[in-house]
Image 1 (cartoon, helix red, strand yellow):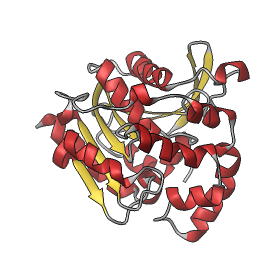
Image 2 (image 1 turned 180 degrees about the vertical axis):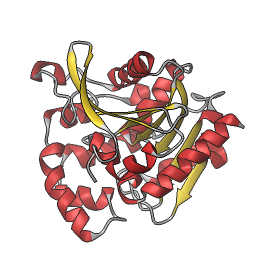
Image 3 (image 1 turned 45 degrees about the horizontal axis):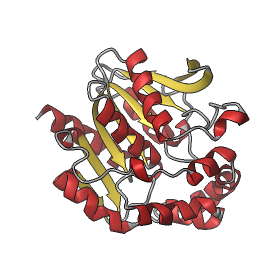
Length: 270
């Protein structure tokens, strides 16, 4: 499925002097929506959801390649300065400049972490966030464990850890695509960052719980399963657990993601 057939078009927008590539589409009416990819990924990760989103109860739909990722290249000298604060600020500015009434956000992995930080700092802009296998709820030890997969990249091992619920042929194709990305400067720079101060400590999201929903897979091999309890302590039954699910449900179970996105809207409106 091409983006054009789903009514999406690619455009380039300015962000703090950088050229950011973004897919933009339109639903049939409703709140705006932003989809945020994870570390080493890009906006195309949402491709299987686009046609149904365009037919769904949404307004403007924005799917950026975050600065430094995908087609949103930044000067080599600036790569090492990109961090979680940049990600949260980017999301807040993107919503502020394009979504007059705020937006719902779906974030996978690093994108989920950034969505939480942006919600904390800009609660008027983020109406609600669906977090798919979100990073950020880890202990410092768990953060290091997850980072090791990126710091010592093995594309075959990574594809299996990320997409255990995908057919073998899909994992094989993903392995070829992942190899150069995992070794890229921007991914390795993020891995080397000391992000411990950005971890979501107990109570960090107090008062915002009703605007958050998590989809978590028991087969996720990227993030430690031990951080599940921390998410449940913070968000209770808003954490939805699927036994057969891996780390990137937007690629393997797009219908499930859309279902949980609908549940998030009901949750925020209730």
